[in-house]
Amino acid sequence: MIRERIADNVYWFQSEIYAQVTAGAIVGANWAVLVDTLAVPEETLQMRAYLEETLGVQVRYIVNTIYHADHTFGNCFFPGAIVIGHKLCRKFMAERNPAALANVQEQSSAFDNVKIQLPDLTFDSGTLSLQIGKRHIKIFATPGSSDDGISVLVREDRVLFAGDAFLPLPTIVEGDLDQLTETIKNTGKMSLENIVQGHGDVILRGEIEQAVKGNLNYLAAIRKIARTASKRKDPQEVLAESTVEECGKSRVLLGGLVEELHQRNLAFLYNQETGALD
Image (cartoon, rainbow, N blue to C red; front, side):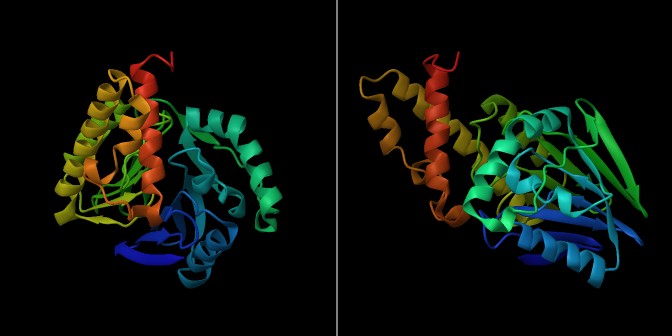
């Protein structure tokens, strides 16, 4: 696990084991708000130990920015914490995560003690607010990558925990390209100091404008490719030959996972263009 303090009493954690998934913590005098958990129990427990033993605080709230297992399987390691999520996050976790957990438990005993802990407090519109010491936290929907996506803004520090709404490579296979485009545009207008992505490194203030532009350009590029492929006799060849580099992104991002994610994005958009998803 990688750990870094990105503002006074605001911390970022990143998995060294799986897909550079991230989590965060906003720390008060006696308690903390956790934004997501890490991908494997070992790293989530390391994060808990740092908060409890080094910083001397208990986690009172966990905000799940998306239902995905790599962001939520650690909920159960913070007994007594109130879990916050989108209404759809609770629904998707209940429907999809038990099977995902059973599958991973068959592959690794490291997950034997994991239990699905659903959000206790949910919302589907507007914002939720928390205050921890002198800090005000705003929790709001950021759809596009997934319908249940939410982000967490630490207002005084202008730090945004964006979840999967902002990634080194945008993903839309569970969401909507137009919604994600709007979400990313809005993120770029927030006058932020840092964006904590759901996966990957923290984006600093001087990097935000270029990161926003790069993600918007990527989404526009894959939309164009999918539309081109839908009009060709050899659509699969067009999709297969359209590399992530041609769309302005590096294939080495996220430990090399981006090419697979890129091809999933293209396939999703192509199916949408041809009506296969209707």
